[in-house]
Length: 71
Image (cartoon, rainbow, N blue to C red; front, side, top):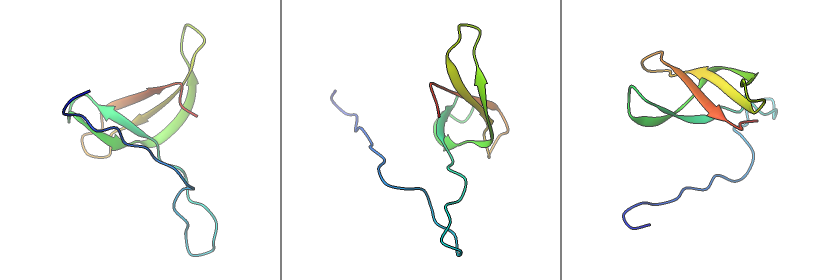
């Protein structure tokens, strides 16, 4: 794995002023923007093969994004 860095995200999501956690935004790769972005309008779906996934939209270009096996 030369030239690539692996990122690891630990800890809880962002906390708003009331001390409660905000909606946990999941990162996915946008094929149109060619970069990782946080998905908007996330919803849990099940693919045809029965695997769980999360579907959302890119906040920049509006393209549909998927994260397979997402929670």
